[in-house]
Picture 1 (cartoon, helix red, strand yellow):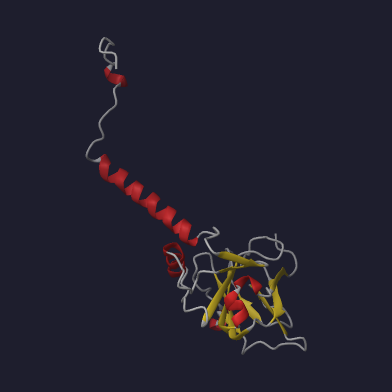
Picture 2 (picture 1 turned 60 degrees about the horizontal axis):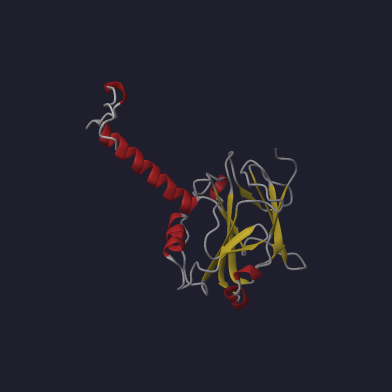
Length: 209
């Protein structure tokens, strides 16, 4: 610094932060930090070990001894009970077959071969990762309540209104929709390669702007 330079005018000198402003600054930093953590844990960002099967995303780490701290934290934040992979596997869909984000106000046909597992279920969640306020408390459909056709395939519908001829998984309101497919005692081939899932198709019923 040039010792001969004239001093700055008083109006241009930086002002020290007052004691009253410090708590507000610390509070803002804390809020921004927490928001970034929640986005990393709950946002639709691909994580380490993510595998994809059609519109469904699974993980090669969830429920395995190799799961890192980020994977364990994300499982806890999303409310998944991460048992060992031989007991339970999870797949999550946030978009349809065309890559468009799922919306609860829209109706979708979900269909495919029964997953290779002893038992399975499909549950609908809102953007906050909580269950919908569904009529009659119908929060999920499962292998026991769905009838397979002659080819071993199931079909169901999601949406604010029931679709004629299809079992209905209600998703009232208008918000982001997250579908979670749980497989209990999955086949050994899926345990070894989660991407080998034959993915249920997710196709919109009618128009939904």
